[in-house]
Image (tube, rainbow over all chains, first blue to last red; front, side, top):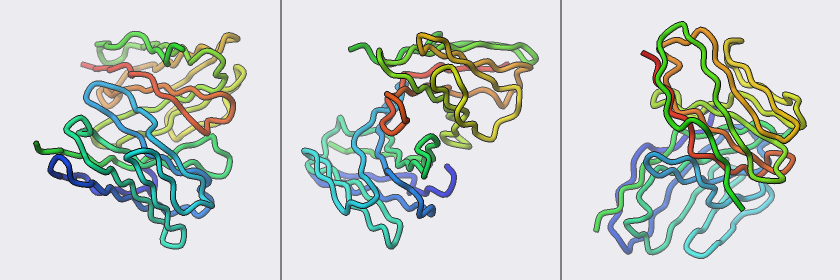
Length: 111
Length: 112
């Protein structure tokens, strides 16, 4: 991705919380997104946050945005084996029409 | 509501050939974007179409082209295929602005 960075791997035990981090560099980012990709499948939109928000919660998912540090995180509570996938952070910039994706974080959930 | 569909799901071609991939967006969605996903480069934006017009374009050579029809269905064409074009090609649709995109399952292209 262009200036969107994520760590490559994360391993957690079932029932624990997972925190996936992302940093971006463009201050004109308007929306920031988290997508999930399972093997052999396309990307599934999990959640998104507008750049003037600090936090968004949606069931087991919590998104935190630190705009000053250009840092985005996704917390998955009570992680399940079905959460094992690659998670992509993405940003859309001023004109909305171009998305920039991170390289993805592979989450491995151990039983 | 049916999701984004892409055909074919898998394709094998040889160098020098050309290929056309198809994407049918979610009913009512007018914006269609295309992405190339490879292990080395990750997800890269190819182009976006809205109302049969290309609104935005990524940094890909002219061998990569696309179009959108009046029913919002979109096709992507790659001419003179190279080995490096082997990738998963993903299509995404949204209502107007691509603010919330919904992705199809992708077309896996292998160039031999």
